[in-house]
Image 1 (cartoon, rainbow, N blue to C red):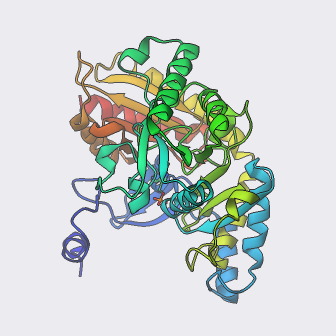
Image 2 (cartoon, rainbow, N blue to C red; image 1 turned 120 degrees about the vertical axis):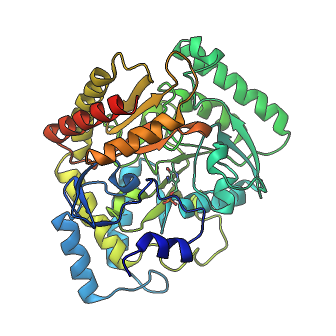
Image 3 (cartoon, helix red, strand yellow; image 1 turned 60 degrees about the horizontal axis):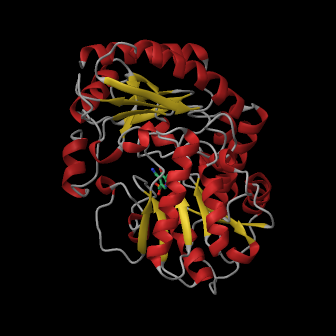
Length: 428
Ligand code: PMP
């Protein structure tokens, strides 16, 4: 009974990652902390891969979920559902998309899948522009627009995808360019790809800050410059806000708002944190785009009352407690601390981020070569020290990813930085 790992291995697929040499069984959580089956406490700097947006065991969410559970746990299709309509109204207004319609899914992958269904149907084309090094999920269609090969388990794509430059600029010839020159070069690349596409292209899909790719952001305004080109061809802009939504970047509520000069996106996808651990995803689109489908739903559970009750309570908490502002303020301090503790550490190439998304890129000392083994060693050492972090970054996974719940306070930011400093030293 106790050998949970052995039991996991005998019934679950071999390709499921368990992150650590001795995988952790999380049993409960509170605030920014989680506990394992041995009672060890961890400061959670990864929020269960950003699914815990506000805090673990947030009483407001727990209450909303248990009250809804006491009434009915049900699907969202066929009947009216009050929490779903209320959350949809809030999300439609917050999205910044005019005449917005909202469709809820159960995950980010399904949200992107639905966005692709909308865009390809609306434009009657299966050509998609995606960004190099991107990640959008691992369903059949989502892997077809994921530029990050290590995270894309098949190349048998139902879509014709062209990969645009713009996600990574810290290496290669692009690294030498100013922001304006970089944008110009990426726009030229986009124009060139459109020339090659020879026919209709449905949409460009992009993460405003690449999450799995290692928290890299293009200069502000890149997608606005892209939008100008896309508009000339009638191509839709899909923004994948699965990691960047709900104020996580601090400066903006959505990542696309750093690229807003030429108007909002046509389609926005979201997921992860809005449910604070409950599985919610969703798509927002202009009514004309959303309504192009001849369908009666996509699946059964998106928008189910229990997940929507959680989402509403969580969103209310986020807005009432100004957590976007907290992400900006505490995230800024954390980034400063991370820069301070890594200054002079030879394996650290770059510390970057926005709000409560911080990435630490690791290399083999004295070289520009990615150091995935060091990243794994730091992850293990941080875990020993009582800190959970993530990793990502291109095909070689050498970027430490830090994305704590948005209620993180300064004391906890300090505590996390101290543990990480030790972990970096011991993994050198
Ligand atoms: N888009 C982005 C940007 C993501 O980071 C992820 C998950 N890491 C997804 C989509 C897929 O979301 P989910 O895992 O909820 O299907």
